[in-house]
Length: 392
Image 1: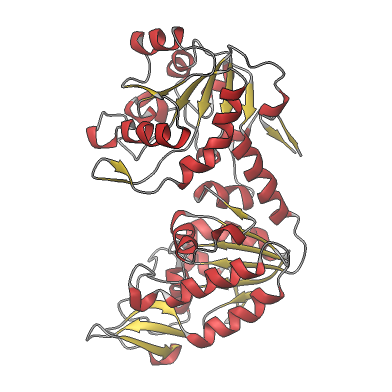
Image 2 (image 1 turned 30 degrees about the horizontal axis):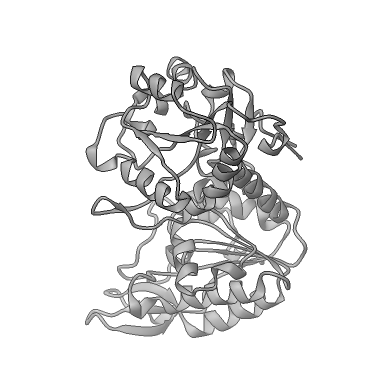
């Protein structure tokens, strides 16, 4: 594998660098609610500023569908970035045009500015070359540090590379290196998967099945398998279109041997209380919202034997106190096994959120800023954002 990395650029002084980041973070009352993606991107930004580059930072925020939505302005992100960098960040409330061009022209070496939400312009979503050309008209080089959107064919990720030399930012480079450790794992490889839609997870299960020792399922993802087995899941969340996907993992009535399903679950009863149930005990008015204690014990055995661990997707509705125990137990197990005994990789917004609740995030070898892109890369899907930057 070869990565065209930013570290190979010999002279950045006074160069205008168009830096595509993924600062798609949650806002709360006009302020950044969670800044881990910003913190992850600081290394590349500081690398550029310390070498005298003139940096134009661009990100999307939410899905305004090519229209200006005041609540999705990235101005709060620029303000938080300023606080983290402890340096001025010039915010330009435009994406392209005269104001942007003028602001770039007066930008000095070692200074940084930030554009408005890229998705306020319809050309971003359609990968429009005309828009892309205008976007980077004054730039000397393009740096992609937004691995989380590299599975998208969008102007700031793909079309811009037609007009500038393209490089991987330091975060993107680390993402790719970490994910390749999973594709060529030290065995045993144990994959833990939760969440809901089997359609997004099936390609990864198929891809990693050969090298994995076990694939441990939980959350609504497991409910899809219970439903296929005609087990009662009550009012539990499941993907109604999933049965055809689930069927691929069965030979007759027998589930593929490496795929491990929960032995017991925690349900919300009709009275709203939490109760542990074996799979044949779930009642029609109940909802499965967590894995049970016997499942945690079983999964613990596999995790403690692993030399490579991948975790994507919570084990249940961990936002509710009564149903957080399974997800947090998995988070603690992964963190305690990683960094030495095993290489541990965790990705996906909710998964990272759960890991952070344990305050053991620092013990995991790589916490990915990506969810969908991570799944796409590991399952061998198309990654147009990496073209001209990463080659095998």
